[in-house]
Image (cartoon, rainbow, N blue to C red; front, side, top):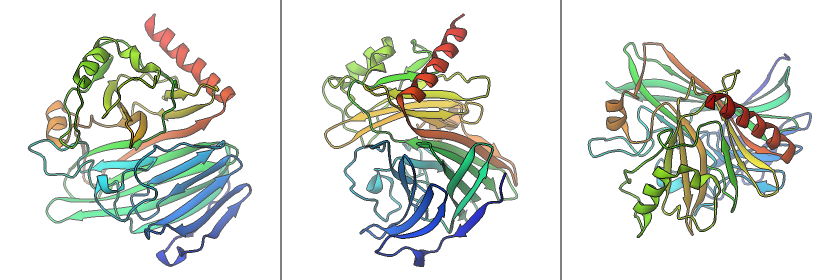
Length: 366
């Protein structure tokens, strides 16, 4: 492993004109500001680029690889400077949590998906190096959250892009800085762009009981005639959602809970296979993020596929998840860490992952 090069970022580096900050082999990173004023880092390699928001939630706002956009279609042409979740909802990856997560219930006081999605990061940096898997260039950051008499923690996400791939490797860590224990919840909200007739392949059994449909409807969601009946049908026949037929009514949204299986290396796999054989891909470790959540929203204004949102809890808000026993606890000085990967695969790459998924399911069914 080579020594890493680290470049600290500051607000003055982000102006109206885009400027290159770092080049490393085929990898590059440049800084710019959207017209909204939000600072952004564009990282690229031979296959495309990803745009991240270093000081606003460390979101991955968009990514374009192999000639196509990966991020959901939304009402937002660019990110907006806000702490409100729904006032800036169009990114490809949002970190959710950490003191609470999900849709707040009647007894909850936390914001939708917690304080992390648009958190104002105090530090951000670029880093580059190489290891046994080749060259990489990454963005890291640090957000310290302090509320007197309540919470004190620091969150540190890292997102790597390697040479020659269209995958983003994410590491997320959070350390409890209090001298008392801290409850926490985390969800990786990965919002891919669905394609008509895309096929969903994933290492979770698609049978009733193993795939569960969320029946509760968030307060900000308005339902249409026939929507509840569609949820009941999916409960009985979950395989109906495995092909994204244009006529299926994922409007306003459908949420499913899946029981993922991991391979011998501890990874679970999910694909959206496009009609041309290429795919969108998410890999996560169920040992770290045991809840596999699928979110599909296909409306005239939003088109999004949460192929899997790996999480420590289901997204029903603090009170409901605490009652289920899904809220975790960090001891004083304790740390939570997780890893996941997402991005695009060429047809031959997708076929290889598809075989791995089929083998996992075959072995589990024996």
